[in-house]
Image (cartoon, rainbow, N blue to C red; front, top):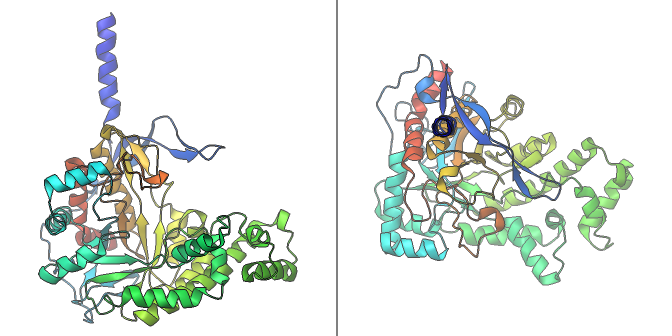
Length: 466
């Protein structure tokens, strides 16, 4: 009896640890990520979510032919050729147009750079020896899996060097960290680590700092056809629930952010202790408008040729209508880091579709339990296997392809977070986020699912738009 029970338990364990096929969906076991009262990361028990996949799309059939130019653009269609990337709306569908004038769907890997942990460095030396070898193999990996762009925090210097000698370039982005670096500089000088980051927007030195930093950083890239665009920052705390209160608590009559906040409170007759959601959103939108006005001006002055692709909005900021209004006014593309939902939910898609600019999802990922990593850092979903990660990837991206104002996505990230990386912040330690592991070895089940979808993007868009 005991042996029968053990066999049955083993069978059930196998059954529920793999994807289940039902009707037109695949069902996965996943754990939902959240934070407890102490702001610590906790996961739910295993629960079930459905996924759509390429293979299960009713009536879909791939042409089996990939007609792509050297950037990854679709050569079946042509637009005006400018030698640079730009945006174009055709009917209800937004597109990026690549330097050769072809519609281009932006499929990127974030953090394409060598890991800094001792285990990463040892593996790098054994496998690649040089950065030249490493970046060449990265290019091959991206081609094999259908990625066409390197996202934020990639090794831009090595990528540019590769592009000088390769007939098929790596399209890349830059992360300028304008307010982020300005804020850190000011905090270090003042010793006040609690000073609100966004208050720096109103510092009279901030515009000059942005102009000078953008000019210095972009001198090499402003005429580069392989550059997709510039991010100004990442996940600035526009969503901060007590942003106005934080400005008031600066309590320094000479501080511009304090002056703004106290005047705002007086002019709008706001009770800071009982501020409404609408009042919070309006104030955050005003701060965002000033931020985008300053950084976009600096970026466009230093590099008028390339796209300004936003600041990677996250949390509730990505749905604050006043912040979005500011972003669409100054950014060419609105970038959004998306966590906490299995798919982009309809109300978010509807809100972003109404904007007069396209958007890209610049962070999302899942983690696999079979990696045997800690997986208690980062906001991605936890699933059972690497194949399940690939299934969720298809599910998430198929939903994005149906949103006609979405022009791409960026997977977070190239490599797993090594547990022995002493330089990494807590959110990027010991976690299975990568297409490759800490030893630079790809996960084949994940890679195959990514390739299956990525290499059929233009056929899939045609299918959804018919």
